[in-house]
Every structure is written in C-alpha cells, then in structure tokens.
Length: 335
Length: 282
Image (cartoon, rainbow over all chains, first blue to last red; front, top):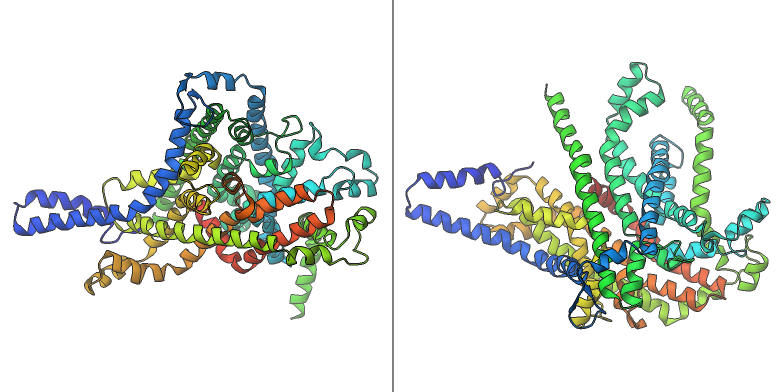
C-alpha cells in the first residue's frame, strides 16, 4: 500500500494515542480542530458520489426489495401486501425456472467454450506473429459495438433463407442445417451463444494478453532450460501465473450471464415461445408490458440475490486465494 | 544477416498452422462486418439476387439517404450529448471520492469503499424497475438527465476504483511539498493531483463514453418519444420500420457502427488499458 502523510494508517493509529497521553492544551485543542477539519474534508469529498450512488443505485434496489412483497401495478405506493406470494409464484413459473436454467446454460457454455477459446487466442497472439496488432484490433472490435447493434446485425445474418448464414450453408451443400437459427426453439440458445462469443471473446482475450505480458520471460526461459516442453510450460508456469486474471474473467462472465438483456431483447424478445428468455427479459415483460410491478420486483430481487451470493462466495472462496498467493510470493521473493 | 533470414523463413514455416488458425478466426470476425458494409451498397432487390458477391452496380443511395436525413444525425447528436454529460459527471464526482479514498484516513473509509465496490456486482436490471418509477416521479422521463444521472451513478464504482489506484501511486513527498508551499487539500487536488493523473482521467473518460454510447436498456426505459432516442434505440427501431428494405437496414447499421469503431481506433490504448486495469484492480 502506498502511504502518504495524510492517508498513512500508521500515523492515524499513533494520533489518538499520542493525544491521550498529553493533557488538553492549546496545541492539543488546535490539533483536534485540525483533525475535525480533516475529517470534514475527507467526508465532504464523498458527498456527491454518495448522493448519486445512494439515490440512483442503492435506493432503487432497496425499493425493489420492498415492492416484491406487494401485489402492485406500479402506480401510487404499494398497499396490497401479499407476503412472499410473489416469490412462491415465481418458483412455480415455468418461464422463470426456464430463465434460471438458461442462465446456467450460458454460464457453463461461457466457461467451457468461450473463455478457453479466448485463452487459446491470447496465447497465440502473445507470440511474435506477423499481423499480431491487426488481429488484436479485429478480435476486440466487436466488444466496442453495442449489443443492440450486434443483435440487429446478426438477426439479419441469421435470417431464415435470405441471411448470409443460410446462403453459406447452401453453398457448401449443408442447406438442410440452416433455416431455424433464432426462430427455432432448439437452436435459438446456441445461435445466441455464437453471437455472444463473437462479441465478447475478444474482451477476455485482451484481459489474458495483459496478464500474459505481466509474466516475466525469465520464468518460462528457466522452465525451458529445465527441459519443460511447451505444454508443460503452459500448464505449470503460465496457467498458474495467469490464474488471478482467469478468476476475474470468470467473474465478469458469470455476472454478464446473470444480467443478459439487450441482445436478447433486440433479437428475439425472449422468443420463440420463451425459449431464449432471460431473467431480465421476464422482469421487463412483467414490469413494463403487463404492469405486474410487484411480481417483476420479485424477479429483480432474485436476480440481485443470485448476483450477491455468487459475488460474495466468489470473493470469499476464489478471489481470496489471490491475496494469499500474493503474500506467499512476496515472502518467497524476500527470502 | 542471411542467418536471420533463414531463421525467419524457418519460423514462418513452423508457424503455418498458427497462421491458418488466426486467418480463419479473423475471417469469422470480419465477415459479418464486411457483409453488412457491402450489402448496404446493394439495392434490396439486388441483395436477394446476389446475396454474397460484390455489389453490381454499386448503389450509394442507401448510405446517402440516411446521411442526408436529419433523424440519423439527431441520434448521433443525442448519443454524443448523453455520453459527454455522463462522462463529465461521473469523472468529476469519482475524482473527488477517489481523492478522499486515496489520500485521507478517516473512520469508515474501508466500509464506504466496500459499498462502492459492491456496486460492481449489481446488475443494472435489478434496479431498472424502481429506477424508472423514481425517474417518473422526478419528471425525468423523456429528459436526457434521466439517462445521464443513472449512468453516472452506475459508473461510479469502476471509475472510483481505477482513479483511487492512480491517485495512490502519486508520491506523498509531492503532497508535503505542496502543503509547504501553502496548498490546502483542495489546492493539491486541483493543481497537482489532477494534472498528474491526466492519463488516468483519459482512461476512465474513454470507458465512460463507450459504456454510455452502447447503453440500450436505460434509454429504452426513459425515452418514450423519439426526440431523445440514442443510436442503439434508433437502430432497433429502424430495423422494425424498414424490415422489408434489407439493404437500407444494412446501410443504417454500418453508419451506426462507424462512430464507435472510429472512437475505438483513436482511443484504443486508453480503452484497453482501462478495462484491464479496472478488471484486475476490481
């Protein structure tokens, strides 16, 4: 931790002790006034951020929690208290249960397909390859496009019969495979996942590239000298050192799957027959189209609970290891 | 010299599979974009007869009509205004908070910081519904502030985390020197810290601009009439409106992509730097 004379925690800890030992004098009084001023400045600087964050982030979340216990159409204040009815209804709602299942599906697919693919590309582009900068720019470019634009683009590419995808399949004699894409109940999630991979793998690849570049070349060189083959170097040197980056990327990927909305809304609006619906889409349908705001709030609350439990558990059991790893490394380097 | 050439030839030979993989992946990435670009130069009739080849003849009216229409430019103007407004607010407010987190010791600091960092894990969708009701009661629907303020609020966690990291790296000696020269904390912030943190401010600004530019959910909720529509909303609406005129939709899509891609090509370094710093410091 970088310490300055103002933020130095050691200094703060010494402060009160030193004060307690000295009788109250003019100097001490002046000093305590200075401390009060210091505190006021510190907290005063936080006020705009706290106000914005409190009113527009925390308050809405708390209010969703409150509203989820009411049957409420969204006008006036909620008054028809129904206890946990919304929640019990939620867990019998096949669409919502489907949302949970699709969320899990996306998480598993991202972790099993998208991230390994991103890692492979990062490893390839971490070598001295001709055109490396161009590939990096190209692979990352879709990340800069909004999900709405990406969605419209691919809804046209995967348009049955007239879209590019079907033309390509027909041209290579596989015409029978096409046609459904976003419109088939069994194909819509796979197609969505393809688009998500197109859009997001470059982002994870960039994270991995940054992580790879932070690995000192001496370590892989040393492993080579010790007779490790490329796979062993990757498995036993690169991968462990990249682990903190991987853990962050997994985290972002899961949070992304929990809150997926834009892409689905633009491309399928949850269809066909709810087969691509996500929690956020269901919430939007109930809250803004059917005016069942209490019920929609219950969906928000479950979404929040899932993110929170996941985030806390992840921080507790997975990310904490990074800190432990860091201290052992430091001790190792010091010895 | 010749040894060098030999080595590079040998390496190129060994790298052949690598190049095949990269070219294949690159093609998959580029083809949708190129397809949209070329399709925009066809007429819809031509597009159905000749879906994959080069346009023949090249039709420029799709692009021309859109560029001549005021509605497209209004979308771009709205998106720009909202992105700039969001960025100014989120960076200013975050800089003050990050200064306090990085340079002051006070009771409750860690708790407060944890509160903000927890904001990173809250999906926007969770707050969307009550936020909409709140904005409605404040009369901020169909008002750019109804998008700017919530975007700034949701951007605070990431911006504060990144700026705090940078502010902490500035050596304490500078602060002492500034204090001896008669600078108060705010003077130090304004005259020393902010100028020194210019690269960091650039990074978080680029992040804020891109996030705002791409936002779809919030403008969808807030803007019911089309005066304030942003580019992503406009694209979705245009597709609905001209679904029969595919070529024109492609041209519209391509034009809608241009500002984001242009900004990316200019600010690539800041964007990537910000994302990687944000992700690893979060």
